[in-house]
Image (cartoon, rainbow, N blue to C red; front, side, top):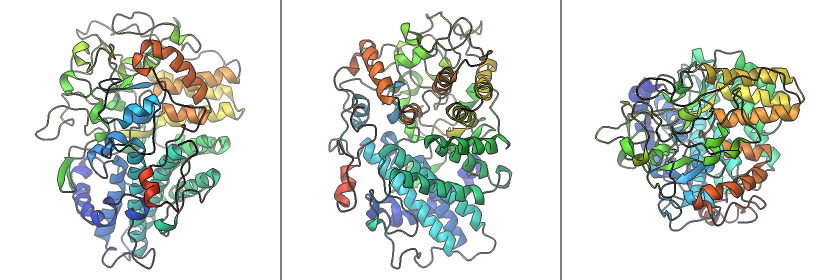
Length: 578
């Protein structure tokens, strides 16, 4: 499942499996429409249990990770990168044309708080609907693959390994649904979707069912040396269990699973920029990545590159002919300010405004790997300037995200016959080793464990940033900005300080990777952080004037799409407040 495999062997299987899935899953809409199970339940139709077909179904399940399961447009509003959720946080603006934007209207609504269960004007590009369907179709594909694997009689087929892979993917898709919608159905290969309600299980029971899938994967998957790159393995499962246990505040279990990962063949990449390169995408830091490539695949009669379409809208103008969506907020830019000693400014970071190359105060060097700033070089494509900004009236600084976008000069960025754009063959890293280090640090801090060990783990992440090659001026005469960063060299004085250090480090390290909103929710601080954010940010970003997210109500979670409720009114119940 690495790039070479996708472009040759597995992509051929994927194309074939798409033909099968067209009748089985991909044309479905509501849960009960996605899986047309023949009677009796759980028995595959004749001819769907050969090794070739089974492997095609497994590949199709992996492909569902891309969010490109209906057409590329659904990846715009239900993206794997989760940028449409980042705009609900203090990290990002929607961008585009600004407050008057009507294109992909579901996305500006996410930022402005006018979120509805349905959007008849969106032509199917409604964020809740796209995110719901992308994941439920993924679950349908996984369950079809599991049924095929179980029905298969082939001694040389790695049945337990493939079952482990599929259980992990099923846990993943349910995890995403649970995190976005809270009240969800849980679907296995034995369930009839027309009988499964989104109110059948409590929240705790749902997390337990997801844990069961991930534990099955952990117990049945081999290590990375025994399975192809790009497939999930035992350490992927351990890392995902760490993520689950942190999400559910099971701190000791999180520490134990983090230790499993840390005992394996993983490490931080030496250069922060390597996380955004083809060379580093399946490297030693990567525990779970969504695989993309330049290869073409046929989907519903059309041919699309197997690119990360989640990013298509997010490139700047200039060399990308980009749409200018997903811009770093001023608040995020300011959080990269450091003291003269190189440490974050927990309480005062927002007292100054970080601009472009004219800003000379100390900054964490990760700022210019994370988003573009006026006057600062953009990879090898020249200097980011005003002409790259789609709407300088609303967004004068521009600050387009860089992490998931290759240089326009990289051969992996374009499909044949197309111009440079932000959708490329670069993988999206969903879990990386830095996650595990900081999750363990968080578990230690929150459980009353060793603050010294937590400090060491945070310092490991900061040390990579310190030792990375900084962004240079275009003429090569020196650093592009006044980069000053250091480790925490004295013990944390108390738990609260350690917590601030950990949470700030996660924001700096993972900025514009689609995690910030979810962190705020699971920490239980989304209301206070966002109230404080809007109070100040509206003066700097006038497009935020008007309605804002009601975090005192029920808008922490997305509404169940009305289209799904209409398809199964006896099964689905809407979240209160929508």
